[in-house]
Image (cartoon, rainbow, N blue to C red):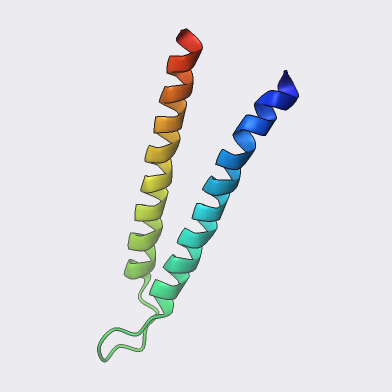
Length: 74
């Protein structure tokens, strides 16, 4: 039973991990990207991208958890 449960959660964990890595790469790229006459290295852009990616992952995790809890009650 534990093996079957792990097999079901593995794709979700892989997707969440891939999205987290993608968000970090986007945040790093936003940090390094020049804007107008500025040479780049703007920490605000890094935190905006990191916060939105983190918020998306939290909302997605909450939706998965609520669905799991609803199925468990039935």
